[in-house]
Image (cartoon, rainbow, N blue to C red):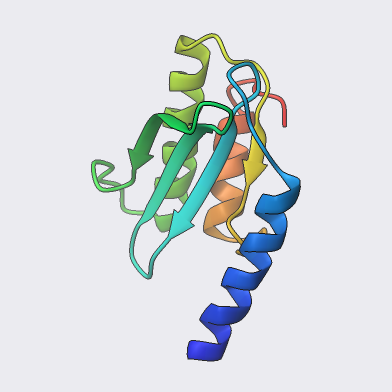
Amino acid sequence: MRAKRVRRLIKKRKIRNKLGGDAIRPRVSVYRSNKHSLVQVVNDVDSKVIFGCRDLSEKTDEKSNKWFKLGEKVGDRLVKNKIKTIIFDRGGYKYLGRVKDIAEGIRSKKIKF
């Protein structure tokens, strides 16, 4: 289990060296634990988190619907802050399951990646 986590962290570091967000096009970072997910919108130039959202407030029966709603919530906040394009940082996780549902929720609000 430890080796799996180390591989993900190495992958995350490689991805982060290539990506960087600014005020016009911030980076959307995804973290997931076994039960919950956290999404942060980050301005890397100023080293500030613009805002973050967690899935704890969502009460739905379907798991995939829960992550999609989290993505929609992030998309709504991006539209409210007048941000039209983002850089999606999957945090070293594979682009499937929860990460994909969050990304699709953000895309549903007409945000460009």
